Image 1: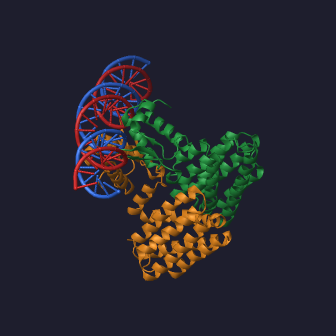
Image 2: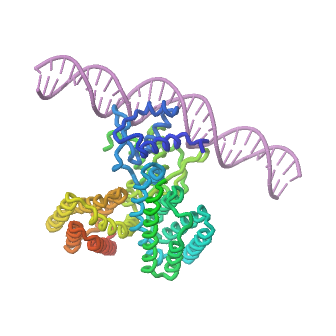
Image 3: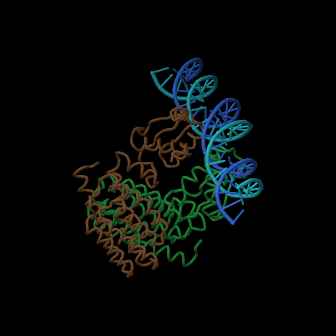
Length: 235
Length: 235
DNA sequence: TCGTGGCAATTGATCTGATTTTTGTGCTCG
DNA sequence: CGAGCACAAAAATCAGATCAATTGCCACGA
């Protein structure tokens, strides 16, 4: 990975330090200090800082340096910011935020998908739901996760709405974060898996209201599950 | 604005050309050609391309050049991408996408706001709604727009959810795009303004269900209005 | 003919050093 | 005490060179 990613390495490192709170808002760096610290040339640190600034994590001013910005100006929809936050101490707050987002978006998406999904998409959706059943029973969490991600991606894509489709990355991060940080039960609950199948059926039969309702139930269940896991052992 | 924004100028110009379709997906640029075309040095074109690439608009590969990527890989939540699309031929598709997004998010946000808004936020919300009434009557579209934007921003902020708060930028772009591209009636409809006041009241009294419902109605009304304006004269 | 391997050109990636521009800071002068 | 001016720090830009990866082509052999 480190093969030819000098720039991305610095970007990632700085991003994590900011999101993780090590570099608090108001902290001022100079480009030179970045050069020295990461032992790279100015081109590299410059571009890393430029991207960071395009994500709203820092702002650079002449004669001052590169200032770390407060969370309120971050581009919290940037997938990298989301991932950094999920990997940092911010994890639970981030999952909660994302959960509330999903509560709004996914039911709408399910409804739209019911109206617009192509036959192929319906098939893919059923297949993904089926795989969730299989891997849920066998307890293969990674495979289950993959099927879960696929399910939600296909559903969002079937809305025909490119912004909802783009939310697929966000949802994937959520699901990934949940399993990889021990916020999932060892065996996915059967009811949750059932609900996915119910969504798939509703979409196939074009029943927008039913799809919406079932998806709503999925989100509620997920929120409960995270809340429970949080009670026990918040990683 | 162009004072000291060499880098941003190039970024903006290239971004618009890509989003506007002049540079179709698959088109290949070389850094040198960018240098020449915009008469800037490599540092500048390089950083512009780097940011473009971080937004998913282009990918650069050695020995090949900078390739324009298909829409499916764009970071459609980036405010700049949204603005570029609203300013381009993509406008109606973009507004439709955003409308469907809002349909999911804002009702949820209204519900959360009803549960969590501080007294100050309730006051600000009522005030914004009041200003919408005033400027709606006087026909001052710019002032009406400002109040409208403020209203939705405050509401989203009152959710206490930073991602919903961040959607404020997106919603602001939508509202701005609507007025500035003649998709709004000369006089905002009284019912629409009423609904805003109803949301404000529901939030103040902590009635999440009512807030949700009223907000839902706002979104539906807005969708209808855009659809109508689209019939007549799509700018 | 087809596939395979190596050579070379192309192009981004990185480094370096110089120059320009902006803007805090502090000092001087009224 | 206040306004303006000179200085210096740091980002922004420019220019040129070198490194490294990858692709396309061509020769060679099966």
